[in-house]
Image (cartoon, rainbow, N blue to C red; front, side, top):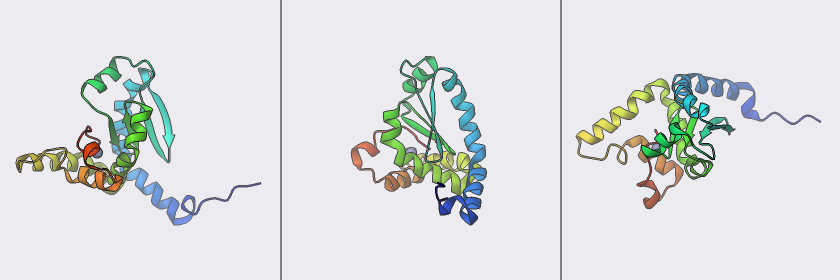
Length: 156
Ligand SMILES: [Zn+2]
């Protein structure tokens, strides 16, 4: 018995999905390049709802200890998300999926727009991370409350 093909997997939806993947591909490739040493260091790769997720092994090596040292819980590059653990993926999935959608909208320009927005906020006397409009949008999109929203690392 054949399973019905979801509407999004055929017709115009399929093309739109392909275009979003292609538009974000330069950022995804950058993420792959950054994830490579983490994967060689024993990192685990999984696919979740069309997004590649990389996380640390049970016994993290030097590359993963560096990720922990700089305080990154999770970070998104196109359709690839790197997180410190499966628990971090679970905790930040909704937030990081907003960043995935931002990459789908902005494509490679997001790699410039995000730091430019951080610089703008810093020049205005704000917090480059917390006040960054892309982070504000991600927190709102993920339905994050106050405590968690202010206590995480850049995800953009
Ligand atoms: Zn974020």
